[in-house]
Length: 304
Length: 326
Image (cartoon, rainbow over all chains, first blue to last red; front, side, top):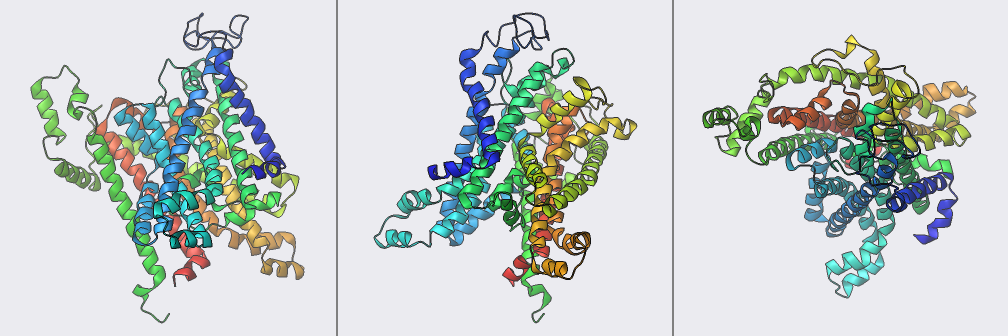
């Protein structure tokens, strides 16, 4: 992928995306070291306006907003990354198996994934979280499970192309095992579409995990978390808006950054926008069986 | 058509899609039922709490059919659901359907308003962007659409509250607090921010869809022909290109409806909007099992049906797909 970097940075939206992502990453990574106070200590009355002691004021329970902001991001990012990686790996495995095995195995795997896609995802997430409880491992598994079917489609399509290549024929001829061919020959050669897909999926992971935290179904109080902070502190918007406004800004900038970057990556890697990349559109995330869409040809023209 | 109609591949494809849709619905109902069976402890115990007398517990178990085998419970539950009896709410003892019906009307109002305003907006701007392809206007609107597509709905909603209802301006009510059971039309201003949030959420997808398909059509030979004939640009775009570009948009609308089935949950929670999504979150917090089952099944059914419609439309309007199967 590294050969794509200069071409990537030639795209304006990719530059904006990288700057936004770097900014939010810097806050989440350096934040824990920079936090002036403990995120859990009560330092004064609730919803104080910014002052010399608490630079961004206090929150609903009188805790330091700045410290909670600096510590409230790395969990979202870490969990989103984990969910994305798990989802992409599971999806890649399923898609490669289906695409390489062909026949009945292909049909069974893909039809089952169609059925998974036929579930409204956020509602399913609500159902499971309400039953098992707001466990972080559950959130990661749910989000990863949402990614797997779409990734599997991308992986299967790429595998079907690769499987026709001579080096695969050669590997088969010299008696390489099918598992070895999948991992050593096919996987490295479908990495580009997988990485592009992972980029798009990452934005979705962040949105979903932050959203579940906001609903109170993810990270639990008193932990500092941007999504949770927004919901906790909205009753004090009139008195001290900062504990709501800044997490809103940070989540927005982060998701915009990752989406712009992932979209540009897709354009550079394929020379056009792959069908999968209108996944950036919300409605597309949950849609049913893949069908050719008029979308794929047009969007690329912007930068062509 | 040389072969009998019922053997026609297009019809077979449609039938297959419909069967797949029905199968998905059946699986959804099984998952919903099984998931609520997995609740730790027993539903009756969860409702009554530790204080309940054994008699009371036994009576409730019987009322909820918890004393029957799981398969029988499932059959009774699904049969009741299909005949319009989804059980009684564990919170207020009234039929679930009754309280869901009012919320359905409110959510449906939201859905219709969002589609009526959002889709024409996306189509209009999509056409303008396609006609002025590669101008600054087009590039900026495409990047803005891409950025908006990324932001989670609740962040959009809260940002609108900050701007229009609390910190910056005070034009609109920040929450749609009305007594549960009242119609949202009692205070129309309450609708503005939830509708605006969902429009912003659905806009990017439809916009990009119509822009891309419009560009495809504008590049085609018959449009070039029309241009060479000396027809006005406006006439070409609106009369010749638009009808052919609109087909994918129908699919976009159906998929948008499907998205709204899930999107309404978060947005209604943000604004305290008395719709089916807020009802679901409340029921989840109160562990009102019949209510959760009924809402989830309704939303899932709606989702499956609109996705199915989207697929059918896509098959019918895409010549490539039609010919691929014949």
